[in-house]
Length: 225
Ligand code: ADE
Image (tube, rainbow, N blue to C red; front, top):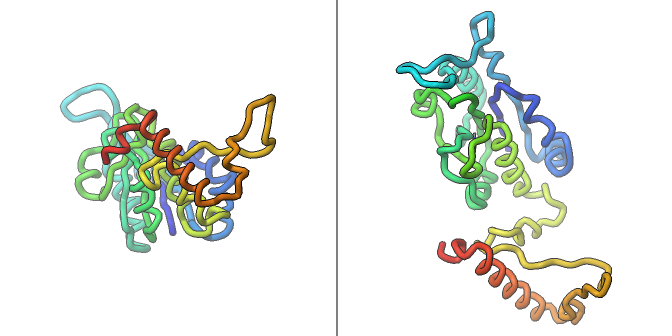
């Protein structure tokens, strides 16, 4: 899989890809992540990427031309499955979207800034708009990092234990059950006895019940879907 990220702030975005699981995935060639600085696609001496709004109003708008040049240059080199725009008015990111995108070959992620991009970018280039939640960030970069992390960890071979992404919260519309490790007794706080029984069907049943109870208590909305 290849991910091309278009941004005015590549430095804000790079560090999550230089540590831990994402770094390993890149080093193992399971994913390629490329950053494109929008200012490299400007034609004026100030390298402007934004301007004031037509019709008046506070805040700057990202111009169509540098974005067109950047996306067009990328599309000349390969086909893209999705061109995603990170925006608070997009579809809210859910596990299902990450699952779907993890199967794609090539995607572009455009990070917005200021008030956002000229509507013509959205009308003519963007195939999908994603929000990471109902709050406004100062730019799409942190959202893009969240989206990439959610996608990349699902690519086969990225997680050591192939089954562990399948047992994540949300994969079956349930939150994950409680988990424990050593010591068995810490300051009198005991691990449930059943987990030492060796009765794996029973343990599995307990985990399913716990996942259901936790979901019912914390996120009953997930049970309605
Ligand atoms: N850009 C600004 N706010 C955002 C959000 N909530 N999700 C994705 N991109 C954004």
